[in-house]
Image (tube, rainbow over all chains, first blue to last red; front, side, top):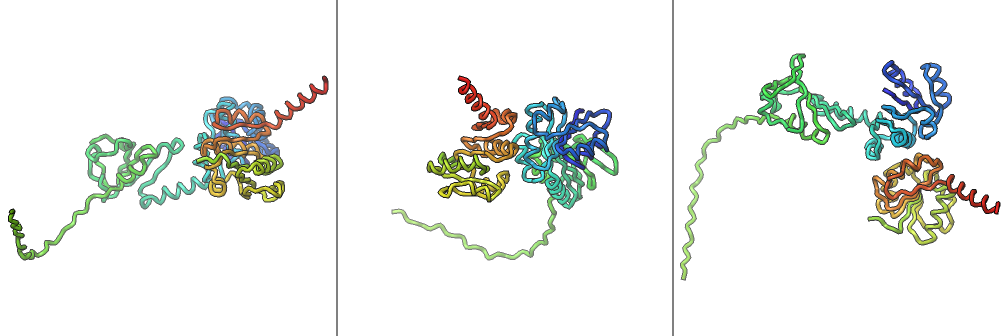
Length: 248
Length: 141
């Protein structure tokens, strides 16, 4: 895989360490001469010096048809310009744009950037997922948040417990990928009866996540034991006599 | 609903203040945006528009202070090509502004706004080159 790492400092160094393997070809571009020098000395890798949002620099670095372009500039707009240049002029398959302002994540995606990453945004998402349903239900977004994997540990009170999958009316737009029962993985079929303390992993589209969560958390109807109230004789209502209107 | 008479000028350097002064003198509703309050010193004393002291890449400022959704035209002339590129995309794809003018010092950026609706790019470099050629040819004759 051909990976381009544009700008960045310690984050760029970390990514170089992570992907500098025989299977990958790394191209490193950095606008800071000092950072470029450090990367060359410490990581023993060639670095093209220059700003990654310039056509000439990307051309010099030979990034044509790379698989992944990661832009780690300090300014969000610089990352936007670099990713756009890489995508439009150099046909890079996937551009990853780091942003410092978390509200830019959705905006940049709307403007055509493949993957937008913000550490604050990820932290907030993670907190939200962890706090979901007393940590018994967790979700993980995949493929740029188009697909969601929901992991749920079943409580006895959940309606889907003690039911065969085929009988529970599981939503059609989701599928149970696997079930963990007593540390064993089960690939489920329709006959599998879910039990309390099973952990199920459900894959669904992002737009159906709320519906699926609602389905999973649906509780069994509580059986109320009503004490029979003493029969009280109601006074017999007087039957209304139909008014007799004499028609003339 | 876009107001044809409303112009937002983002970036109030020499060019931005010149465009804003001219538009205001012609009776247009003008809003100028710049993060540096000293930039507004370049505006005429008679400038009748609104001055918004804010970061133009902040969507809140564009929406709440400029009401960009109602703009008839936006002129993007900050000193940073990447900011200009980003704003051209936002004005076109998010707010569907009917007329967008954007200045790029780097002519290579022009290819990136090709296909964007309502965006016209201006390149001072190219304009200077054309003018230079004209003057040179005229002098030779």
